[in-house]
Image (cartoon, rainbow over all chains, first blue to last red; front, side, top):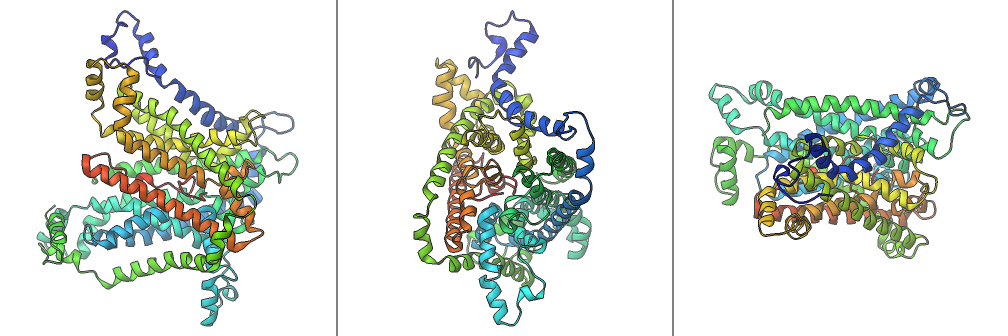
Length: 302
Length: 291
């Protein structure tokens, strides 16, 4: 790596070198990293983009993969994934916002605050297989909460609830999405200066006025940015839904997974790549929006 | 920040009277806030309780005796070690080098290292299987190499935060004027100062590897999380017990980061590794049994 620890390149014996060469020598220090990123991230990305437009049998350019990926069950998959992502970003967004505010108003250093923040950190990092098992034990057909509810005369399964369909998956997603929202929205609350509230009060503003004209507008970009983050998190999730439904729910991530597991019609081997490309493009749009919102939010938070 | 300091003082003085009216407003906890927190508590605790009841105490002892348990766990642990070593060997010199010599590239590095979080793992593995040479496919080596990519964002962020808290330039200059070569500077000056960052990078990488499911299952390799699912076909309680164990391990890991991070922050007043930088999204969390 570092070709010497000389703090100032100009002070070493390279003074005579042409500037371009010296610059190239400096850049050589990040060569291993660059190569690794190109191989581990760049090459797969190119392979997906390339394969999405390639006929699997002839190897020629084609739009049929894209066509297949944007119609029928795959279009349905994208729509269901979007629907799930919207539900599991807006609902936890609102709940997480309220919980975040409740934590923010608790005393600094209070037990409630510490427990809530640490718990959020832990729960936001739950997910995947263990989470699926947790909920099967709770709300599965023989789960404990299911039995409780049946005992008080409300069997969820005879009332349209099913843990293994979209609604069930959404309920399970809340388990890591709400804490994630709490964690990402808390800094925004901490950025609300008490001085703003005092200034508003001095000018005769009531609580409602403060939230309508000061707190709300300041928090809005942060809130939207965090909801976008949750959307992305739900959008690319795979393990939780897969473990819970054994892949029966038509989410795009699961459809891509089933391509890899070999459940493929002849001539459609590259549709999985087209789906992958679609996911990356949607995420890319989200990231642009997110960056924009973060920039707006950063104006007030420092 | 009158209200905040007032509130803090009030907090330190126990339940003494609030310093300002604003603090008073924030201290009186209205009913709706309790309702929200209680509701959240119920939602988050019931599944834990249910899983404990469902598994039963006996299952925890049985987990260890199951066929495939030790193979899967050993594989996951070995992967964790290999991935951590590779990640640190790749990222520590690179991050230090960028800080010292190419500070202008920091923003670019940040954007590059965020990519593995942004690209869904299920998409990444499609591309990887496409380009990987056939002798690597379906092997744990491929898995280890991909995990280095997945660990990059978290390793970079931890190291970057750690380096930012240091006066790196002065340290390096001092080491140089005392006659240390770059190797001595790296090993005996910079690395010891980065202990917290290194620890958090390690912990995050280990947690990531122990919990990763998507890529392992699609690379058809039976790591521990994949084993839990495969095992569910035969015994529900035992795999639930295994899941709870996995959750517990995640929790211990996170507590470790937070404890070490905040102790360090108290001492130096900077470079805190907070829970937000620790949090990952469902794409590739440092969670045991992630997505």
